[in-house]
Length: 100
Figure 1 (tube, rainbow, N blue to C red):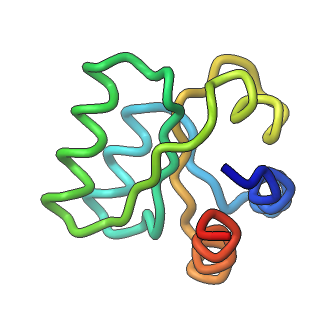
Figure 2 (figure 1 turned 45 degrees about the vertical axis):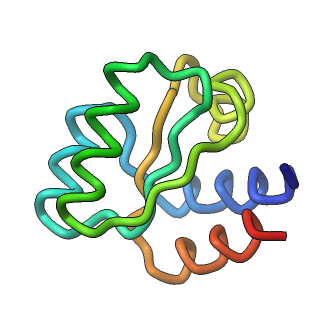
């Protein structure tokens, strides 16, 4: 997988366009704030199922990305297994980078 999306993720974090924390992400999906959800490939099965099921029921795109260490380092926070992008522009750019 192309790692160029990580820089864009860091920019989105600095612009305060990311939601962090499993419960906060679920709430952002419910309130139609999340445009894209990124889930680490080594997240627990329970967390992955919870987030993917919620995304499917609310029609929010999600992508399984690199491991939690890489995801955490890209935003400068430890132990993050998922993030929700709230800005449509950042979400579109991340989709583009992830499909390269």
